[in-house]
Length: 186
Image: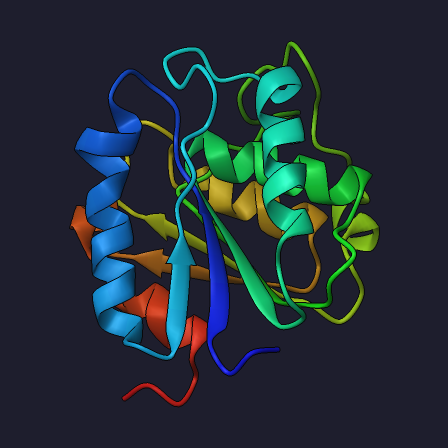
């Protein structure tokens, strides 16, 4: 590790998500974490029509450039595709944490899946010993808060953070996410 901890932030889907929505999340996270962190924020292909087939290879390419100790974070459908990508093929580097932010659960009880469904043994398929955090706003009307419980049901090691008064974008405030990534933050 280089002394600067890397965070790979995978955007959510939808037209304009990278530049008009999730950029505010990345700004908040970068501000909260400070200069000892590098937040990488690649643009996913065809963001208006997210798909596992297009996004997963892009995520794998980004993960290949990470150092040991990196954190992977994904917002909305970006988190869903990220966690499925990790379950199928973990990166070569050792991860410090996986963070899902308002990620819809694809499978029984959640959203229907055309390309994949998250399996009941999802937690066992993730890299061992990696902290997993699931953040969800209790006012989220895009991916209902019950999705966080669905993740908890298939990732035994997940720590679920339910945030009252927060929407799908967590009101553009990732201060709680920063504290989970960097436990020494006040």
